[in-house]
Image (cartoon, rainbow, N blue to C red; front, side, top):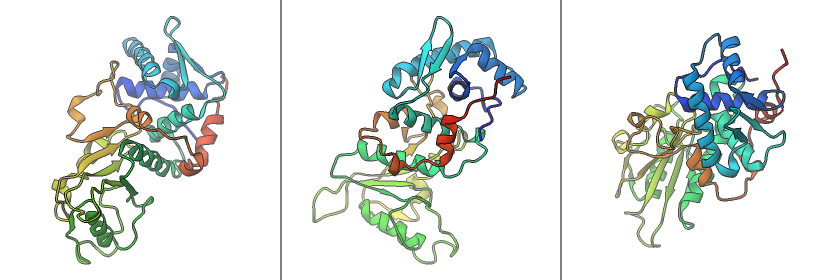
Length: 297
């Protein structure tokens, strides 16, 4: 179900994610520097530097402050250990869901967990816009739009105050994709004129490596053959990663485009409403993970 061998890159926030996942599946939900080091060495056949372990615990301390009630772990800086309760609160479970979505390579059966992430992103987007705004799903699996791809994009264009440029010949007949658009938002400003309004297109990306390039999928440069706007839309990307350094700034400035980013912290900061698990509908692997414990050796 989950195979924790080694972190997939050398970023400290990646090592912190690995450590949090490991803590949740230990028998007593307590994790130390040695627990992390031994897991990476024995299962991943790799090593982690002492300096990185020190940075990791500094990062966990930052997270415990930044995420507040959503954070499932208690960090003991003196003993360099951290732990989680057996029963997590709803907020802590939501953090854990995003943690899993950010670490798909460790999951042997991903089922539809990325669809659940799109629903989390939808709620965060809805909470971050004014109440009269319209928020719609446009993704391939989660969508409020019907019809052929060209018809859906033209409808979306009209909703955000623009003009759709697509025809039946624009895409191949078998192309039923979403054009890289997962979410759409717009704010109607009067009942007579729908142009020149605030709007946004959103992309959801769970891959630890691909989200950087996906920032351009909803740019005007990429979509200008399909949508002619009366005012440029905002570009949003939703990622389940906590892409932060130990001070809360972006981990790597060079990987951030001219995009509004909702990472793990910003998503949870904008999750204003009560958590509706029936709507989020995470796959069974989520509950399986929460119950899973590593065998004693």
